[in-house]
Length: 183
Image (cartoon, rainbow, N blue to C red; front, side):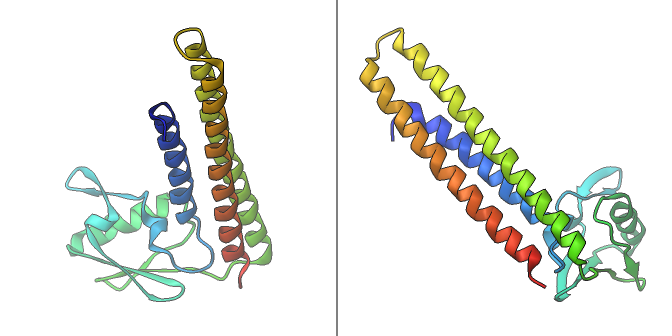
């Protein structure tokens, strides 16, 4: 791949990976420990990811269990979960915290699919903006030492990259939508 294209490929890949990580936090009726990825717990005055203060397991399809390494953290973890946008009330038995994910209603599933599609569209817009930036940069090159044929070739390669990532986003969106709609 042309060195001038590599930076745009990297940026598009990052946009795709961001969307992939964002999708991992959308709960689809099954317990997915990634819904806790953005949560921070006050651990001796330092905001710390929940994964670093306890053991997270999925004992059943719709239950996440958090076993803190220090019992004193149970209150802090519960507080972090309650103030987040997960929408699940934690329950604890003094040593572990359980998050029970309710079955999603048909209406909620449809709302989640809309959210998935909106995020996919945002991802596509990001990819297209990267393409636009690349094309602008190539046009500036035309004023210097690069021939018009080379510019045309770079633009075509950038378009192929754009098409590839947009197709990957569409595939990712379809997969996540099916996952959400599966009862």
